[in-house]
Image (cartoon, rainbow, N blue to C red; front, side, top):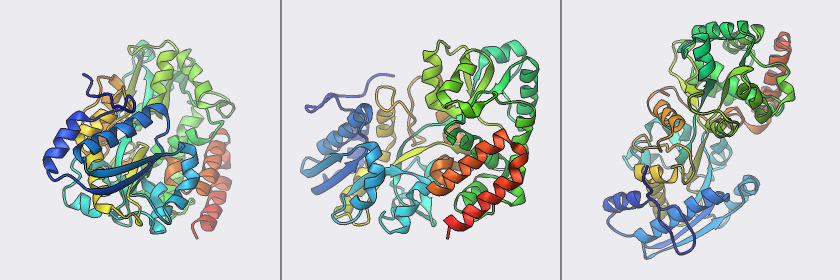
Length: 421
């Protein structure tokens, strides 16, 4: 993909040149006044992207006074509530779905539903649900990445296996793999969150995206028969020896060795797993990707953690902020900022394009056209923090001691009663 970036005076900042022209054509009157942006895009590549976005928006609006403040990404998680209070900026970074919940409920994020309803944000239909709480939209997404099944294509070829599309086919493949002396899946649950990915997919495929989000919002009991059905499907994999042994002793990175050494054939993980697999010596003839198979006849939801821009409800320059959100959400801008030379992730806008990378292309196609159920943000983002912590402890325990299911679900239900009051 040819470069569409430029160098600014301040730094080598990402510049959405094509997006600038397209957006400027549809917003002929330059903006005036002020625009204050606080961003947590503090790592080098994201910082360059953020600075480039501001530089391009400034070029389009030379009379607009833009003030950009970049804060540490981890520190922002504890600072954001205070920043959204008195003297709030006009635009901030955050995350989609239930991670927006505390700030929506506290009245700290601006309702931008009119931008979606008025056609200001074309190409965002697939992720509108991730920006929706209480039937309204509260921001715009600018980047995300897919989860799915990354597998050893060479081992599949050796065993005569093809990519499964149904859970029955997945289990049949797994049996062949186990019979060959391998584990079906690498996983490291030492830090718990990887078990959350398996629950997300099994629950969304068993009961659907809407049910999964109802559970995340505390509207469904953990002892509900439909939740038990999800665990019953999960146990089929556990009972057949599908996972590597002692996975609770490994981080997700440490468990990669099982896949690179050929002792396990697949890893349910985000697209960030590709780089370390390549670094370990596997090439793209040995690695491939497929969407998590269907179980029930429900619209397929996908885990795709999404980063977002929001307008604080206390912002003073909301019209300028809305123009910036439209700019960031436009197709050409998202193509530019998500390229391999920039964020190296996926544009959320379905009308964008992606770099010529096998896995980015597959992920973009899947999320743009085959995630009809909706886009989830991952267990520890969709569930409230305390529920996520208790929940992931229970999920890991189930993977090691599946006979403890009744006790686990009772504990999770007690936690639900306490946390969601």
